[in-house]
Length: 174
Image (cartoon, rainbow, N blue to C red):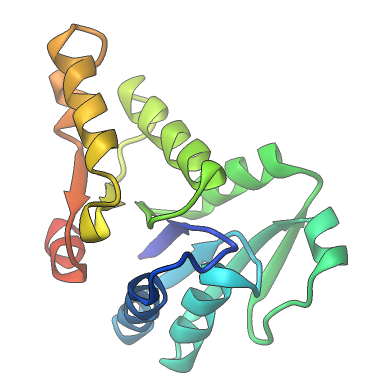
């Protein structure tokens, strides 16, 4: 299975993020899945890629050219350069069978929001997982529940989103 993982180029303040993203990458590699990610070698992106590679996993990085010029690339990653962020998002969707949002910033939120929008429009029928590590996405979950209770998000869409608390939850959902 090709699994897109959306996450940041920063590590965050809590070491739990770095430790857990390594475990996620190792899980992907150990289970013969392919990691599809944003292509960077820095922050949590680099950590998940190195972890998957360390376990013999295949790793595909989809990265805009302007990032490729700015940062070193991770050896062993199959790099797909794109012209811009929009093309990167589209290519990652085309390549992936499942989608995971790890704790991250605005880019991560943007990417997983597009997946949820496509699911809501019945244009994508793939597992969508929001890794709610240490309650990171609790407020987003509450927002989605509010959208549903107020009639702006169908329950059937919300039912297709897994808020996972652990890698075991992810594995069980997939």
